[in-house]
Image 1 (cartoon, rainbow, N blue to C red):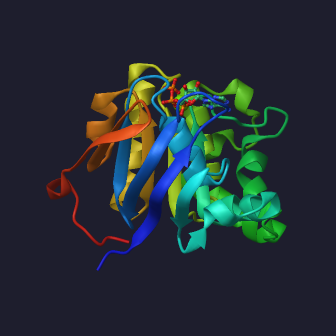
Image 2 (image 1 turned 135 degrees about the horizontal axis):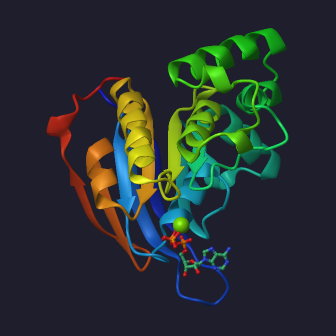
Length: 235
Ligand SMILES: Nc1ncnc2c1ncn2[C@@H]1O[C@H](COP(=O)(O)OP(=O)(O)OP(=O)(O)O)[C@@H](O)[C@H]1O
Ligand SMILES: [Mg+2]
């Protein structure tokens, strides 16, 4: 049995008096799914992701993630929610360049009140798994784009998120590094990680997800599963 981990019901968002960035969207993601959100620039992909992440709130409807009514959270509640349940990776990594790789990765756990020893242990394990342990003491600015994205993935996984959100994670990478990150996401999903991936890149979507949602002008126009690829109920 798989349960829904993300549920949007009639979630709409409009900025100012422009057209809605997202029309009332209803959208469910089951635990263990990897979903690609595809659509042209300005179609509402990041808006959707930001609602799931609790970075923004809908004007209408509800957003429930891992049992939390995200649309009802205040600022502090949303920060706590993100820290405990959401991992995010971005096109430009969003790492802190004044901190070492290890300290970047440890940070979410430290903010969540995990002890230094425990956080260090988990970070070392993640850096090892992701093949970047040798860069632990470097600052991210010295790493290649692909390596930086691996650090960002490690940081995103630090607090064992219910959902990993990725907004154009290969957008700033060359083809080889992009494929490397795609492989990483595929591997994480195979281990049961629920993933929502926003991208312009259909090939990327096909390579590491088992469901494709298309958005145009703030409306979900298409939602296609290819469940044959991945067994259900892994998580
Ligand atoms: N904070 C904001 N204030 C005003 N308008 C916004 C804001 N955020 C997004 N929008 C508008 O909402 C619409 C959807 O934007 P969104 O960022 O979700 O698009 P996107 O699909 O992620 O595009 P891209 O592929 O370029 O990242 C766009 O018209 C955008 O200009
Ligand atoms: Mg965007």
